Amino acid sequence: MSDILTHPYSGHIGTVLTFILGVNVSVYLYYRGQRFKEPSWAIRTANLVRERSPRFSRLTVLYDDEPVLRVSVSRIWFWNAGRETLDGADMTASSPLTIEADQSIRILELEVIQSNNSPSNIQAIKVDDQHGEISFEYLDQ
Image: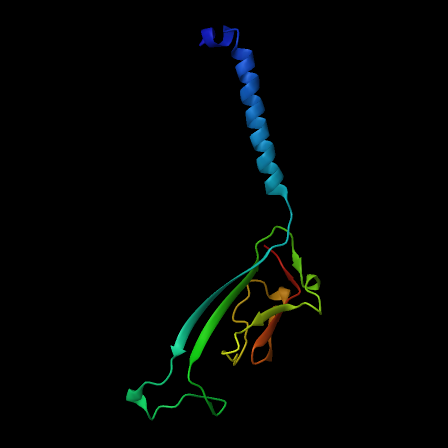
């Protein structure tokens, strides 16, 4: 062990290793300390009723007394993946956070099922048959 410490290059090797370790730690801490807002979402859809089968010709599915051919439930998870608080004021009135369905799809209802932070006041509002809006006070990570 004493041979390693007395070797003429041991000081240089220690300096290089310390430099490499210092650069790696600095880069890691720089990226770890970055603060940014990153709204993220995921969606999962389950078909509850598909178009009628000829086997069930007398079966009718109604929503508000109107027949519907297909019924699906989509669950949308929305969260802030960034390290900085996402304020509701970040979403402007001219460009709100919007849910938009394809023209062949009709939104029947929008509802907030669960929130892990009730003071954030998350709301889902149906605008029309193809559009909805999500509003909130704030979202933390």
